[in-house]
Length: 565
Image (cartoon, rainbow, N blue to C red):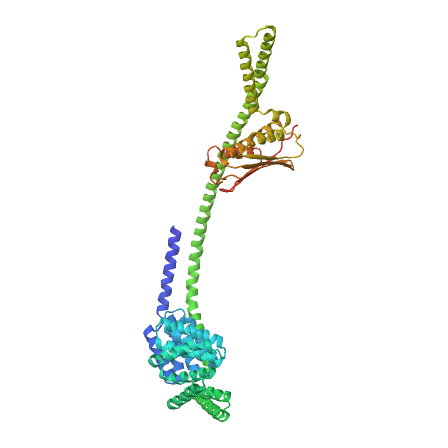
């Protein structure tokens, strides 16, 4: 613990020392950086691109220094917008993507809306990748809905309509157009009225409502001339010329196409002039892009030096603490493993003792059965037979038999029969004389009746004999299992099947009774399955019980055969 405290103290001291060094640098405030971003954006809107790019570059450096994702995203958006205005679409696309990457880390849904919309414009109007453009327009629409900016919703839906109509998917664009027609008067931008009329003209041209198409196209051109909006006006002339060509009004179509080309040429000249005006930047645009790209790298390099100093100190702390934690964990697992091993060993010993007790008890019972059966058969039964014989001789000598003599003889015969039956129950004569298969076959027949039938299936060679003790054990185990079926199963069909394979006796007992939950069989009184399992395990055999409620039971036993020596 003393070592850990020392390491933590050194770590904290070094951390605050590094923080003190870092704080000595001249880091701009968030307020100053925000003002720079706002100035850069204002200059961009005033088409002062040279000044806007310079301020946005400086603002970006500060935004990265203070790690403000919102300001970083705004800087990239302004830089991209400047390049967009200068028709440097690839550069604009690159910085819009960067801006979106940082915007995603903020809650500024308005900025996310604009960045997605600007990316969509480049995909649709410059790259002609409409599928991607529509995807970004729809992302922009999601953020417009989040901020509940109805004006922006109308504007974005107009862009989506235009994209769908450009690729001839009018049915998909129609719901958006209907929404704009309904809400444009109240929420739409005045500058988008030209595009709205053009889109209505395109749709009515598609459905061959020519009169309405002409009305909307001419209205779009009229508004474009009035507002001097060359870009949307040029597109209106182009789409109108397509409509006129389709309807074979070639002269008027040519006039509109010529006006489109003229306007496009003027727009291109104006864009070139913009680029020429920006030539006053000391760096070419490509070099400016490289410098912007290096701002993050330079800052990261500077920051990395401080991080490395902290990392060296942290590394030592982490290694020492980690080593101590690993040692503690290893010691804990070692202790738990030892404890678990001891617990398992104790459990195994207890289980083995219990098995031995059960087997010793059952072996004792079998030996007693054998002794009592032998005593009854060899002694009591013989004495009763002898007494009966003497009475028969006495009865033969007397011409008139007394009633008492006849009753005594009858009592002796009943006693002899009961002794014989008891002897057979304790140790069946069939088992002793003919072996296991005969005895089990006879057992199935004796237990069968009108409500429960036991089917027997055994080897063809029924004369096979095993070790006497083995036969007794298997006979009484199977007897117990059949008794369980009679007492508990409520079955009407049962089967005992015996096969001999590779020196093993395989026993399978099945019934179609009510079954039971095998997970709870050990607490069911009278089943004796735990004792049977212990007996089989002691014989190095296997016992498998498969039972389902209302689907019967199957018990399989595999026991290594002990042959007669």
